[in-house]
Image (cartoon, rainbow, N blue to C red):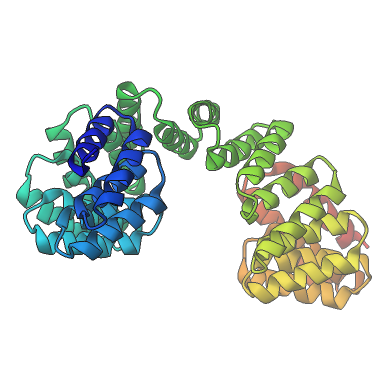
Length: 429
């Protein structure tokens, strides 16, 4: 069979979706004529269509070695590199394609998308603007340029592009979803909810819109609706780690601690390098008095990110409850080293020092707590008690009076009255 017949048969097989057969025929054609750039390009396309991106890139490269001005091969190799995660290489290829075919809106748009993935937002905007100059009715280009503007926190420009995308295509569910996110970032939560709901009306399987609407419901304190939307996001996207993580937080808030544990565990399975999952699961274990499990999770979180002051403080709390007071103080001290303005860590260390009988150290930590947070009622109360143990009745009463006032101001009548009773007892002595 002559080479033209192999080529024609391969082209027909590819047209019918028989890409493996097309690859075999293009290979035979290339054995006869190894200098056929178009056969390499077409075989590369067949490899691409079966998801074999490395071989596709290799074939497009061979085509370009034969014909360095083969614009279609640069364009195709750019797509294959993009799909393989090589966004920088994709940009390089699209640039070559644009130099050879400067009026190709798809090449500009695809390079813009590669820039978008690299978070090169200004370059993405430039490319989408060029693409829209060549094809003004491209809703996807307006959408992607809008996403780039949002990446730069230019919400007005981003919303304008998303509006334009929806004028071109009023059933563009993803554009409603993204417009909802823009409104959410602007603090316009009701507008965000309306857009997420419209996105879901158009595409009831859009997991990201369920997730985003769940976040918005959470912002409004509608936790049950939040949980329902995260559950829908997970139903349509069972590997949606962030949805499990957020549903865990919401379940914990409504008292479903076992459900929260299950969600954090799933989030950890999907993203084992995310310290947040271990930290939150540790907190859930602590709330269930599973202290050793809590310490273990906090420890893993800190191995993943050693700069988490709050996690050191939480592990300190778990160690304190286990009776490991020196270990607790060590953790509180590390939290303070990371964040010297962490009032709660000073407070926690003060309470641990009380257990060791270090009254002066306890008072010093309460002093630091109150310098950072002058409205920390419990710190005034505990410092007053520490001063009373040292015999400083007058200073203790000053602290009790301040604590009572703060508890009254926050509406805690029980604590307010208990401190007044304490003050009366102290005054009588």
